[in-house]
Length: 183
Image 1 (tube, rainbow, N blue to C red):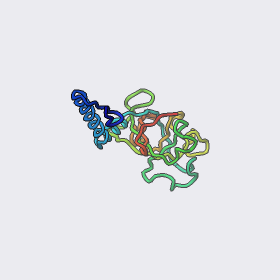
Image 2 (image 1 turned 90 degrees about the vertical axis):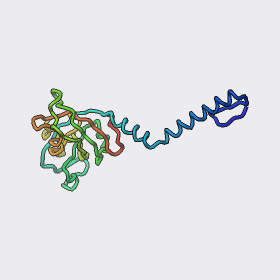
Image 3 (image 1 turned 180 degrees about the vertical axis):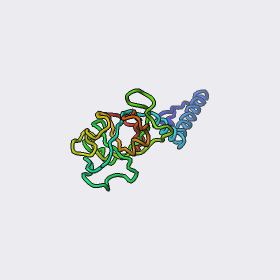
Image 4 (image 1 turned 180 degrees about the horizontal axis):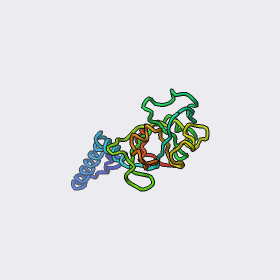
């Protein structure tokens, strides 16, 4: 017997050699398929197709103090698309500065109807902790307390109908292109 590779053992008889060649061809085809950039893109796209859902409410200006950056208006993105997060995403403050892509799924209380017609996904930056008592996103300023995310008013109105106080959202991290898992 002659060993060609760890996965392939060939013998001298012709019918076994033919079987060994077929196995070698299968391995080569599998290897080239796994090295294909198109396949890698497809796998990434399929992975992105599964979302974790949460709920979001809003808070309005003035946006002043945050748990992430203290005081000052320079901490907020120019787009004014930012948010405070609850315990599920806060990660002891490690969430500060992270960006997430959100899409509206529906009204948090009664199902569909809470989304702004034709709204696209939005990208928002974490600047605050929703459960802080000292920040601009403190509970008395939230449209609904107890949601997973508290969006700035411009972020909320970009994806939600103005007639609702909270919505269901799909949440995707933009840094790693992976949908979130709540802790």
